[in-house]
Image (cartoon, rainbow, N blue to C red; front, side, top):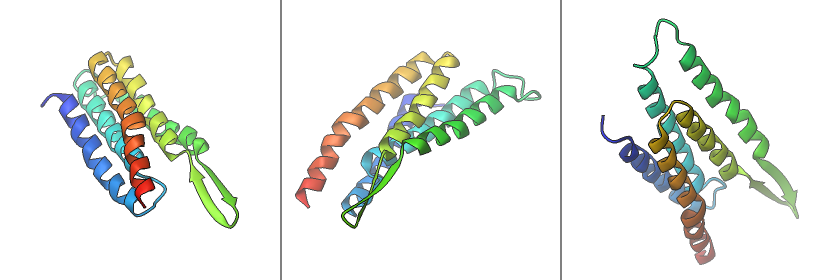
Length: 144
């Protein structure tokens, strides 16, 4: 397996390309949300690939823990998403926060399994999404 950080970078970039199109189309979920969801998904798969050989697969308890975590954090993320109606205009917010919470769950699980370098890299990549990609999205939105 190639260096896992390469997979995370590729997933982040590919998801962000989809998000760029969504930003240009004035959709709610944009560069950051798509990038985080793609990278978070990649992180959970990498994590399962690393822990799979380390656990007794005839007793899949570790995989159930990871599966429950992935699903459970979705409910928390759902609570972070707000919809409002202002002056006959619908507004949705919190999608990036929800995606960030989901990635944070993956980071925590990654630390729990002892993959500290992978967790640190993903944290840095997430901070880049929250900051640099925010400026990029704002620049795109202002141009329209």
